[in-house]
Length: 101
Image (cartoon, rainbow, N blue to C red; front, side, top):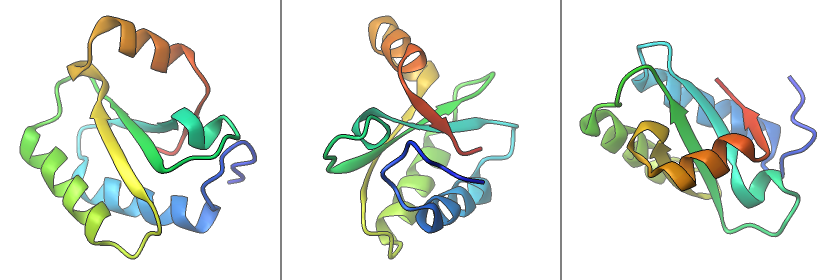
C-alpha cells in the first residue's frame, strides 16, 4: 500500500500498524492526521483510534508504551477519538488523514 501523502516512511507505517494490531481487538480503525499528512514539517506522528466503543485506558497505555520503546524514529501522540471534545473531533475527522488500519 502506498502512502503518497504522508511524511512518515512506509516501512515505519508497517511497524506502527503491527504495534497497533497487537493491542486492538475490536475492529478499531486508526489513521494518521496532523502535520505528518499535511506535508509540513512535523515533530510527532498523530494517531487517532476510531471505534464503536471507548478504548480501554490499559490498551492505550500499552500501545503508547510499545510505540515509545520501539526503534521508530518518531514521537507519537495517540488519541481515542471517542474521548476527545467535539470541536477537536470534528476538525480531525474532517481534516486530511491516512487510514493505516
